[in-house]
Length: 215
Image 1: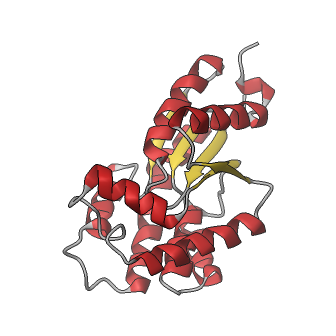
Image 2: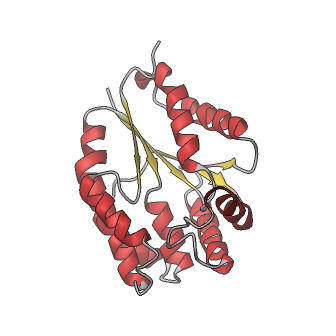
């Protein structure tokens, strides 16, 4: 039996964490194998420590290059400790963010260039990529308004960036989506949670290999 790697992407405020939890719960009964839900940055003990450092608003002197390298370092550890073992065990892996986030946030948001950021992440991941990516599409101003409403005063270092930064990130995602449109499926995330979850479940069910699904 094979394995399957699914990533969820989207701007800040897209609701990825909530959507993934509900999607995994709805997909689980259909699976003939186990599944794992993980996240980036983070997903393993060491990677979570790097996450805390990256997202801490106190670290406001972090350069764009250092930030990109720290994300890649966290991802490399996440791959080694969590994702690769899960895939080797034949599991379906759901990851809240993966390389596309770095391409959008550091490549475009920080103006480092998508190609440069892709290069360090190809090294970090040994070229392993998701089989399927669901992009939860929400306009930056809508996503930031959600965060301000739900978590005002608790925004992390990247969420605190100006709207112009988040607009560049969104443009970066559009470029990445166009370049890899066969892997990336776009879901309108400005609708109700139930509609978004239903769409995601339908897309995943249509893409999962038959051997991973119960008869």
